[in-house]
Structures are given as structure tokens and as C-alpha cells.
Length: 127
Image 1 (cartoon, rainbow, N blue to C red):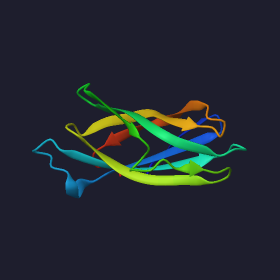
Image 2: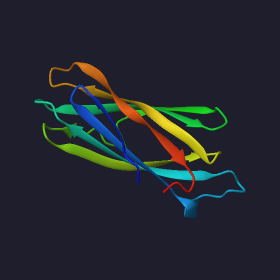
Image 3: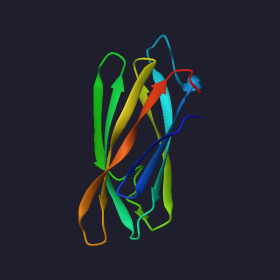
């Protein structure tokens, strides 16, 4: 599984996508991808993940924008030297595309900042 990594202000985000052949249907143009995310805090202070903002691109040039609070129903607090992991999925109408985005984070003093979610490739049968 290929790993894609980006570090912003001492926070490292690693994404690992995988094609879910058993849940996909070529003839129905339904290509299902899971992605596994790890967020590591290399800072000296805790941070909280408040929001996510994704751009999901398919090979036809279509872009879906997804925004929401937290990740999979949580707004985790990540202490220095610790990490948070989760997984989710997306469905494309094409066999190839990519995802990228940002997380809105909060410092202990209440200040907000964005961190980069690395662009990662979604490709059917590319496991």
C-alpha cells in the first residue's frame, strides 16, 4: 500500500489508499476506495482536529467537495508525540482519481490553523 505524507507546522498526515475490488462494480461505474489516515503530532503542545475539507477528483474532471466537523464523528485531541488514526472510503465513477484537502486544527490558546492532507492517487487494481 503506497503511503503519501505531508507535514504542516509539526503535524504529519499520512494517507494510504486501497481499491476495494469486491465492493466495486465496473459496469455500474462504481469504484470504491478505502483510505487509512494517520495524524502525528510532533509539536510541543496538544492540538485538536475540528474540521475536514476534502476535494475528491475523478478522471473525468469532476470534483466533489466534502466538508464537515471532525473525522468519523470525532474531534480528537492529539497530545505531543501521539497520533490519531482512522479510515473511511469514497466512491468514484471512474477507475482513477485523487483526493486532497485540509484539516482545521486548534491550538491550546484557541488559535485555529490548517494542515495539509497530502494528495493521494486512487486507482482501481493498484493495490
